[in-house]
Length: 190
Image (cartoon, rainbow, N blue to C red):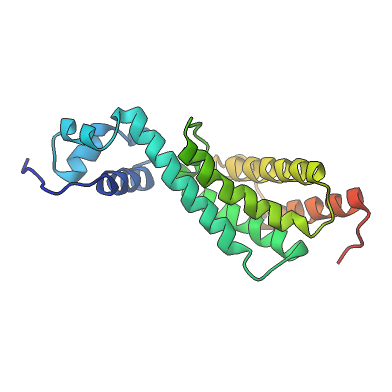
């Protein structure tokens, strides 16, 4: 293998994400990343703290990416439309990037992970703000929405939803969630 000069941490992250996207998270190893970068595995240790450190770094990177996707999905929309846009963006990203989605769920004890994770939470808070919820209700509604979206996306990715029109079922999930918020807060539908 030829020695590669000028290797940077972002090169390691990009190569690892390419492996995750192409072959799945189970295929990720330091050797696979080193091979992709045409370097020896030990040279990666100057950029990441072993495989655990690489997974943590990837979790931070994809969580930021996911948060930006969710934020961008609701620009210029509010109310019911914002819930729908947020939910569809969540599902699309989770199903288009299953390995990245799995990484975004990785528990990382890091201020960086908490900081980038706030992007998605703040977007969800803005989406739910127009429904007149108290902060406690908004937090519960946000957790409920996330659980519903995660469950649907995970079941869909595992091909465990059964036959039928998944898009129609997903739209029903969104309508059911919005209706539940409206009923719970006595807000008029609209």
